Length: 386
Ligand SMILES: [Fe+2]
Image 1 (cartoon, rainbow, N blue to C red):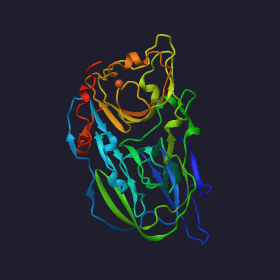
Image 2: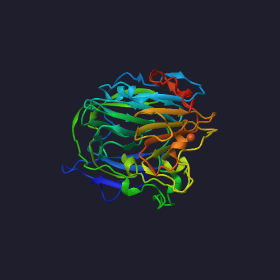
Image 3: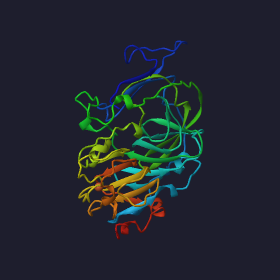
Image 4: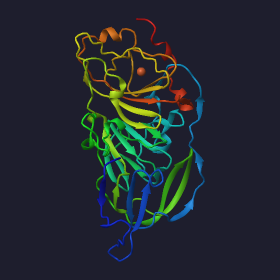
């Protein structure tokens, strides 16, 4: 996140003597990305973050591929993913490639007896249902309906839910998640034409230093395996930190739509980008105001990218029957378009209350075993009739 932030206490100069009230040194840690070349933070721990007591047996959490190659418009009924108590076990990868994994999750319980670190991917956790607190060493972030929680790789975290009704749509990105480059000036600041700005970004607050010894289980994900680590000190023992590498939240409800006299293309909805994909937000907005405008989208041949839509809320104008939590995948290689009747119906309409998240991966997605269990198999024929 290209905004400097600091919480707690840090020494006046980096890499200098910084002592606790009892005279012992705090443990400085540089958390850096792309070697030493990209975003980083400096963290000050009560104890070194290296005290490993024991290691558990790693186990596979790699997605099981059911359909590697396909050319069919596909729909998944996301809310048919069954709720499960445990946060990590509840996460079901459904669409994956080498750039990103898209998962659905309906966790019931908070994480209380372990911590989690994704060491190979940034995570974007879109909160469709539920409220709670993302707890990290960097501080805490309250979350609720419509929040994107962006958790950079290497962040140890816990999800604490207020109740058992939670639905999450999760993107693991194997490259850094960034704000769209075209909206940033040469200093990294979001420019005036950006649909959101730094004021909309919610950074961690309420840093709570937990100075404890014990047995602290951290499940660390790397290369499709989960490694159980037992550390001797609490992972949230930060007394202070500063830098640009930390988790943050952005609400889809704070995305200001860009509209025009004629139909605006999907890039106006872009919210984040990773290597080889973009994440877009479709939010309630006024329709195009040319007197002869057609608000529904045109038929579209995405020659070289797949398109994934995750339906959140509202009446999706170009689709005849969609339900909350539904995913459509329109693969590159064949055209897709509005459902029969929706173009005519859209003419003269002044606004829409649709809410959806779109992901355009530039390389084909594979379907997992969990995906095919929630597939609406007749979807590819849904353009028939009128
Ligand atoms: Fe499209």
